Image 1: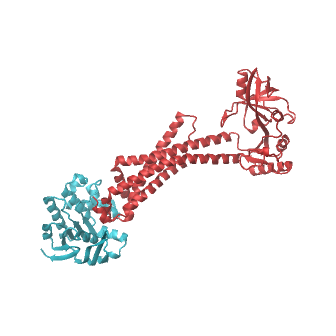
Image 2: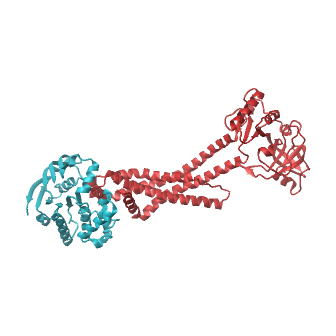
Length: 225
Length: 399
């Protein structure tokens, strides 16, 4: 489902070139649960951004659902992000002036989906994430765990094929963090491909496949717990 | 994105910063109301002046000596052309379309009557003067249709001269001295007020030939011809030109139609209105800069949000239009507030100073609102483009 071939990503920092990703070759099957670990600056987030089509590889090829992403124009990229990819961020990234329900429906609003259908989908996802009573609260009226669950609801509202979570528990206490992980795993069990970038060894141990990255390279790729 | 959602998203961004949005709109509102107030006054004055001019009717044509291009002021001092004579005026009277023809000479002289003296404007003119200039009499009659070359010494006084010299008593039949010569008063003009500061009531009318003699002039200052309505203006002008060219041998005179006079006057007044509007536009410009500032701040404040909605699948064009939309909403609503305020203040000014003519044309109102929206677009372009071109990865990192 996701296939990376000889992906390189170089950044110019001053007059030096930093190889954030160095010859990444990766196949991720539909429905996998993958964790990416590694020290800061090892390229985990860059890898996630390239898979999420927010960033572009300097060279190499990237296929998402058999489509060559490297050839896409801006419009096609935006559409692919909207339909196939859900993002969950460490800092939630909720729009503060919108309610939980309005935040959740943002991807549908951007895609021009009719309000009636939106309401229906938002209601479904709110219920499945036990957020129904929080629909009309603004983010500052929600706890950290609730905020991240709203963010997950937003990421899954378009029924994407892959969910990208960048340190999803980084800003949460132990209890809320494990709730969020349980929520993400439940989604994975229903078929969504889950990729989690994390520092937390416990989370990595729960995943079915774990990548270890150092200096822009994959140094270990463990399958199975 | 649906239009409704677009409005809701831009609206929520504006409402979330109430004071800031209000002040930005106020900037535009002040600019627009300045433009509206100043153009209302300009347009009011414009209409006022034009109506002052058209009170003499629009079928009036002025012939003045000398050939010039614009308002027909005499360059008689260079004097190679023949002056306009009383005979010229008499000849013009015989044209079929001529309703009334009056030669005019104007000067200043001392008028003495009822043992009082007043220096006043003296018009030498003819029998048809009240018809040509729609100036009715209050009492008595105007100068009679005497032999134009040898008229009797009769005079008509303006209402102010009458009041100053004779008070409440009736001057008709009384003798007065004008510039030393004796005249008998036969009529009093109705009060006409001032035209552009010139007091039409502070005047005395005497026969043309006597006026020429009094002011020691060879020719008339102008001949005014009122033609019958319905006759094409071109025909009148060419008829007058043909006649006078035959009499003078060449075209050494200028024909100015009322329409030309109004055109010249109108274009001068247009420039004044425009200049006044331009002054108002400066404050509008300042309001526009306010929008640029606020939108630039909004873009940097919401960098992370921009990154987020890019990640959720927004295109660059959508980001661009969202921020442009915000700028336009600010300027459009500011513009509407400015229109209401400006219109109100203009009317209030008119109430407080009734002499100040005020007129707000609808086309200007629409134009001002369109300008406000255009300013919003122009002011929004730079910040909105910056927002659209943000690298989503960088933007998301911004907290």
